[in-house]
Image 1 (tube, one colour):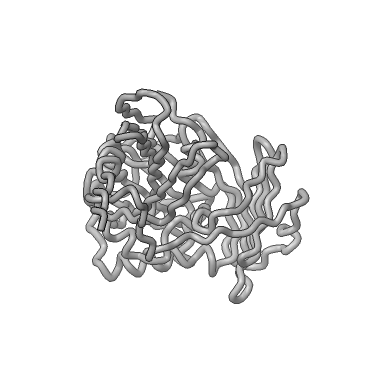
Image 2 (tube, rainbow, N blue to C red):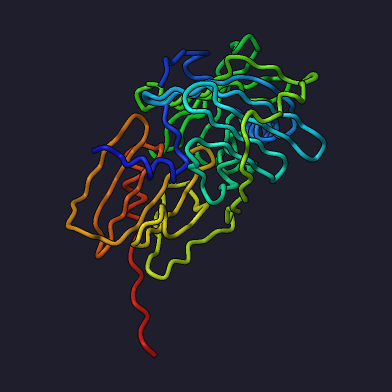
Length: 332
């Protein structure tokens, strides 16, 4: 089954494949809890605190994208500009909470999700280390070079069957992520981000921050964050895959006439989306996989539940089965 592109975009999933380079010993020693916590916090903070300028490649499936990024840490405010170097021209400029976009064909959204803005490579780890540590064991797997720069390699091994392994190349001096790879259950590559050119620190020419196109300033949409709890009048959620938390809930996607509910879950590294919409015609349960993206759809009462995310099929099935209709409240 072909997965609708609208679901992929709404779930924050970008599509792109690559060759996997083995690195380090097969079973390196896990980091201690203190070491793992320190690593995650340092790498999460580095893209905000470190100035850098580079070009990175994003590959997933049959898609390939090259992006230039310029980031200048300016006291309490960081300034960043991104532009695509192949395909249609796309450009993003962020100065603190002020975000401007240039998109082709006037295809602008009404707002930008603050959470998704904070997940752009190399800023892919959450600020709270426990989000990651609850789902993965971290091992230091060796050393390598990325774009001519020395890096330490870390493997994130899932603690259960509900997520994929990940591998990261980290600049030891600054903590900046230089390369990231999501790996399938058979050790096949799923998704890759890697710098092909990088300057870390030093003097970065501020002329590189000048936009090449007229930008449209858009409001940032606040994510509900860690305290979010689902309070849907019709649905209860019981038995989520361990480590996944609801980070966003929204209704009426894509301007559809019928209401569509979107719930976004995350374990800190990956996201999974649940879509609930009224059933319009008879349907049967279906499951499929495209690369590392799993898709599960099933009818439930008068609704169709669709779950899609960058996780194994067991995870989307369990998340779907966690949804049950609330019992009606007895009339007083």
